[in-house]
Amino acid sequence: MTHSGSPRSLRVRQYAAGTVAIVASLAATAVVLLAPIPYRAMGEYGYLGVFAVTLLGTASFVIPVPYLAVIVAAGSYLPPLSVALVAAVAAALGEVTGYVAGYAGRSLIPEAGWADRLRRLMARSGSWVVFVAALVPNPFFDLIGALAGATRFSPWAFFSICFAARALRYWPLAAVGGPLLGI
Image 1 (tube, one colour):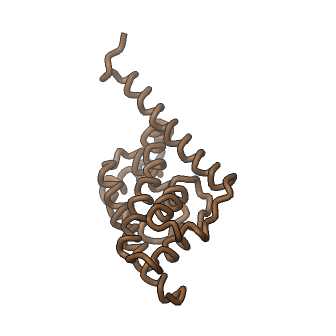
Image 2: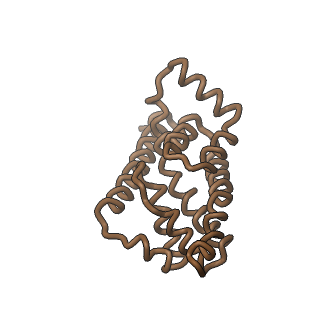
Image 3: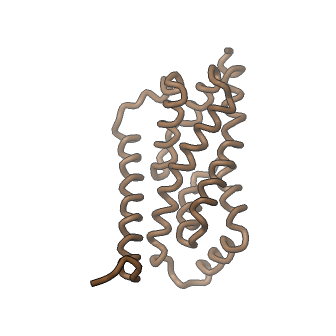
């Protein structure tokens, strides 16, 4: 009989968390691919539309979702800072799927020189790596999230840094909504 702190039960929990993250990401990807979502109209649903589309876009595996257009559209009639903050919360939540997959799959990373260099980089400059990667348009951010999880980067720091970087990234986009759309 194993108790809850044993290495075996820890591995089971890690695999379960990884499985949940992968299933959530695959479900988001399936919704994006299969559901007839009127992305252009989602900006008209206000904060809920911004949150839902941004969450789908960031939780799915490298499937392009036009959530940036929804942020711009919503910023044309809602306060841009509020739109950016709602989108940043959704994006940070969506990126947690990659983090959890990396956390659970840590044992899959080989003991190789390149992997050791990545571990040292995250230990030394993980906050900056996550911040810069989340701030700039980056189709490979899922890999950064997985790396952060695999190296046991603090989950709260990962979420907080993603939130801050994405808020800074989305605020100007929401702010151009009014002038760009002639409102």
